[in-house]
Each structure stands twice: as C-alpha cells, then as structure tokens.
Image (cartoon, rainbow, N blue to C red):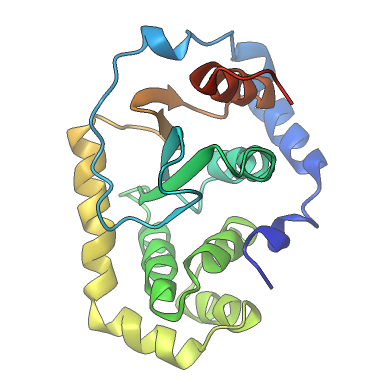
Amino acid sequence: MTGRGLWKPIALAALGAFVATTGLAAAQTAPLALGERPAREVPVEGAPSRGPAEAPVVVVEFCDVASEACSAAAVVLEALLEQYSDRVRHVFKHRPDPDQPDHQLAHEAVAAASAQNGFWVMREMVLSNQHALTHEALLGMAAQAGLDPDRLAADLAGGEYRAVVERDQADAESLDIETTPTFFVNGHRVTGVPKRADWIGWIEGLTHRAPR
C-alpha cells in the first residue's frame, strides 16, 4: 500500500470535528501574504522529502505525528500534494512534544522505518493511530504497513534514529518553533492548520498560474 493511499479512507469529517472542537474555525483569520513574512533558512539536508527536486514551492513541515493538529493538517496537505504534484516538494522534520516520551518513541519508529523505505507509510500509520503509541503498538503498525517489525525493533534499539529526531528538535529550537504543525513555505513561516484555500493561494501565487 502506498503512503498516500492510506489517507483515502480518512473521513474529512474528522478534520471538521477537530476544527469545531478546538474553535480553530472561529479563531483563524486570513493569514498575511507569504511575501510579508520574513523568509528563514531551514536546514533540510538528509530530511525525508517527496515531490520534484526542482519544484518551485518547497514546504518544510515541523510535525509531531502524535498531535491531533498535525493529523488534521496532513489531511489537507495530502490532497494538495496530489493536486499540485508537479509544483510542490514536501520536506518532513521531526518535532515531537519534548514532554511526551511516547511522542518521541513514535518519531523514532517513523524515522527507523526509512531503513525499509517505509518512512511515509509509517508516518501516516502513526498519524491515523495516535491513541496507542507504545513500543508494541508501533511494531504492530509497522507490520500492518508491510514492514518487518523485528528489523524495526532492532533499528530502534540501536539508537541511531533517536539522534535523527534530536537533530530535527535542535533545528526547531534554533527556529523558535514552539507549536506544531509549523510549516515553512519557501522559507516563510506558517503556524497551525492552514485552510485548503490558503494553500492554493500560496501555491498559485508562488508559481504565478491560474488556480486549478
């Protein structure tokens, strides 16, 4: 099963419920144009990415895969990545809640899945199964995603992927990131769960094309 395919069964009603319960719909106002936001240099070397290497729009996401807000943002972003597959490159950066050990473990598992070319599918498994993030549950998700859970367990035990997550955490701190999701769209910071219309406006504006 492909990474994006996992999102097909996710009901958009879940996103609506999240927005309603958090009051996000009422609180969110029209964002500043990206050009009015100071652009930042965001380290991306070695980070997982998808989309054309020379895409005109680069979206760097600092994400906590155990966060409901990140799950809601992912539903919208996945649809946009399909719609603008020729225009957008998506780069993922780990930013688990430092006060939640299970969030850290989940990120290590997602990072370790990259050794089996399963980073994106494991990320999406965790985003859609945030209620159970124990070591055993994460290995079960790996098996469900078609990965070798024994190999994932061995890779987790090695500690290599803890260092990967900690590197991204250090990058987040250097950029003063305090909440997730935080995106950098061509270097311009966007915090929270952007609306689909916002994404379309930014992508179209940066590529100077008529909306699809």
